[in-house]
Length: 94
Image (cartoon, rainbow, N blue to C red; front, side, top):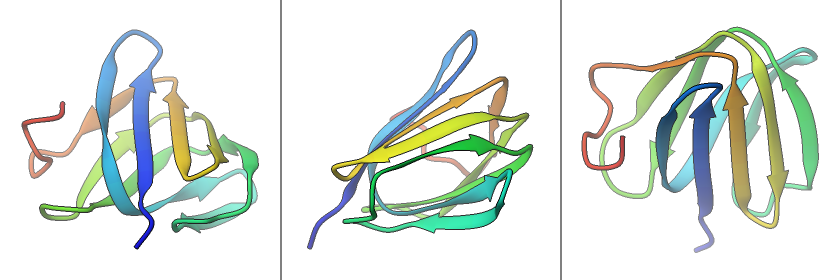
């Protein structure tokens, strides 16, 4: 099964990267879920929670203050103005 390669960075620090099955967040147009083989897109990221379902490990969230995200060829890049990992996030890839 295909998977997403995800990178999350804030304006001043690295947040998380890894393989995921699902990335869900809120764009300026509304909530969106990204699964493997999603069509390419570029969107403005609204403030709120990103939900990440990694290939291995538990689902976790990242609180973001806006920014943008792009999707292309099963690669998701999220650049947030500010981002904070939830306490339940996996420690190995922070």
